[in-house]
Length: 353
Image 1 (cartoon, one colour):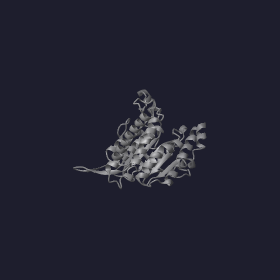
Image 2: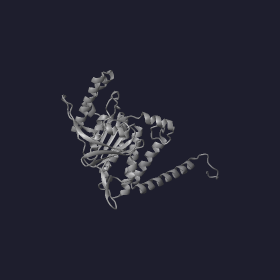
Image 3: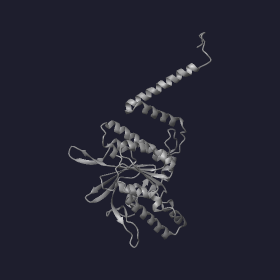
Image 4: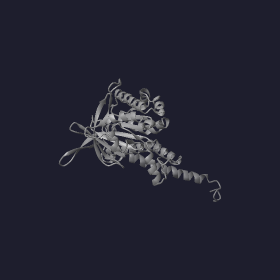
């Protein structure tokens, strides 16, 4: 208004009032988020700014993306699902119950007691993901996030050397030109140089690493496998606020789902087992509670039957529940000078396919 009471042509005052109202609403959201999540107002404001940037950014995504405006048909989803590759485990029985191996864009959780072979399978997959496409692989790279310090580079060397040798034997038998060309770069040194290892010693470092993954994967676009070996370990100590732990885990799961979809990567999580006390007996169940069980698309449980290792496909959207026996063996081809290959193989009661 001017001094005569008429509305001024200059609407800066109205704009300022509207801006002030928007600031007030934004600050209310910051306060509510701060109280609900248990973080500082500065952290809540920073989170809100990130969300605003995402909302106002380019939301056009591919059918496998995480954009909020994603639209596609059921046929497109089916075609997308059928074109997703698998990372083989070199255990034929395990690949069989998984439907071909560990599927890209999915989260697979491997639960089991210590010493049953969870880390072994993770290291195997970190090598297998790099197998060239002409040999049936996905020609990718791997990120290995270790929370328990159980990564053994000597064993990875053995697995990688034997995998290279295995591909050489296939090339010699089939005598195809593309095999020889692929093997020029598929070497022990090349495999080791494309396993990106991160050591996280507490939940803060783990959360930071996971939330920084998209930037890292944008710079390393060939990564097709993300392993978190020991998802439960950082969250089972020094956590008095279980509600906060649940919120952090849920946020972590959502971030991993987005990462798997946006970067066409398989995510492997290993989890410990804990004892659930019942009225008549106690049972071993995966750690982190029932709500965490919904995070993974596929859940494998490794367990013992006396001295025999068993793998049970407990949860899968496309495969029936199955149990197979497997062994961790050392394979040394007769007459060939090469390192031993410590790997998973079908157990005595399994049929080789």
